[in-house]
Length: 142
Image (cartoon, rainbow, N blue to C red; front, side, top):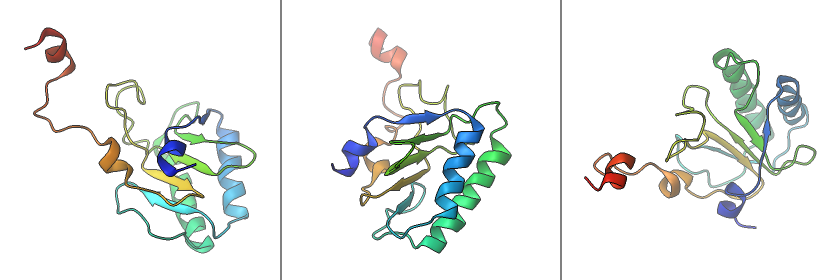
């Protein structure tokens, strides 16, 4: 399956903090050299991430989520398979948009981990320029 199909595929939202921490701990405690780590605020990576770099980045992201997302539930981490993940989406708690994706243009996850080489998600799914008509203007044809 190609990267875009995986990105748009079915994901399980991790709501409980214990399950979120367990996922991070499993990835940190058993790092592998076959993950592509894509920070969507940077350029698309051209190769897999080393196990050491993966551990550093996941440790940092886990800390960010715990410090900035003070909800009773997690809700910012999504995985394709809880027991054998091959694609993980992680949203930055500081950039959740309106109701975490219910808007016309939902936010893009900041961190993507995949076993498949990534493509430029930002170019594909970025919000349109501000001069495009708003939803209300589209409806009322203003």
